[in-house]
Every structure is written in C-alpha cells, then in structure tokens.
Length: 146
Image 1 (cartoon, rainbow, N blue to C red):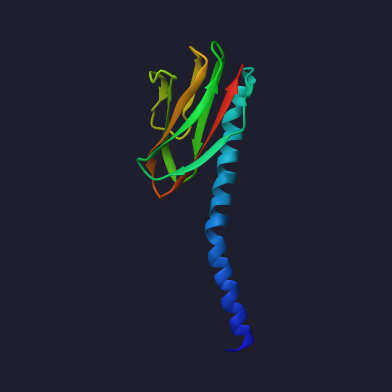
Image 2 (cartoon, rainbow, N blue to C red):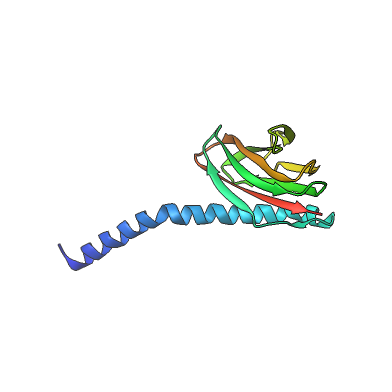
C-alpha cells in the first residue's frame, strides 16, 4: 500500500474509535449547560450546591438508582436534566425506610424535587428515562441544600 493511503486509513480508524468518546463529551457539555441554566432560579432562593453533580446514560424506559445522603430537617432541591435526545426524564426519591418521599413525573426534561428531609440517612434517588428518541440519553442530577 502507498504511504498516503495507509496514513489516511489510520486517520479514519482513529476518528472512528474516538467518535463515541467525543459524542459522550458533547452530551456531557449539554448536561452541564442545562444544569447551570436550571440552577439559576434555585440559587436565587438561597440554595447552594451540596455536592458534585451526578451524570449517567439510560435507554428509553430504563432507570438508574443513586444513593443520596441527607440530614434530618435539611431543606433540599434536587434538579434533573437530560440531553437533546430526551424529552422526558423523571425523578423519585425514597426514604431509607423505602417509602416514597416525593416525585416529579411531569412530561418534561427538567424534573425538580423540593422537600425537607424527614430523617437522616441514605435515600434512594431514582432517575427514570421516560422518553428517549435515540438511545442512550444522557442525564445529570444536582442536589442543593439550604
């Protein structure tokens, strides 16, 4: 093979291998931008980010569970967002006892949970991808406290 052809094929192979990582990076940028946009109103209410955001990817109609440690009597807001391929993501929060505390299952891509923690402990946050047009859809969640 000619050196130019070999170089071209190697460049195409490298580009193909990098595409999933590049796409994921683009989706993460979308999620970070959406979290920042939806956080503005939460920050105005005197809440501050309580921890680093959590990110993930889900297929249509799938869900993921995340552990969230909260303090009794603490006032919290948890917001979720999803990428441009998603039009509906839902959040549900369960107490350490397993009882459902609050949910946002509206047909939108920015669910918000605002509540006072009834107990201290490890709560279970369920992120549910209700409508994803192209699998997987990427999502992000941020916890705020006041």
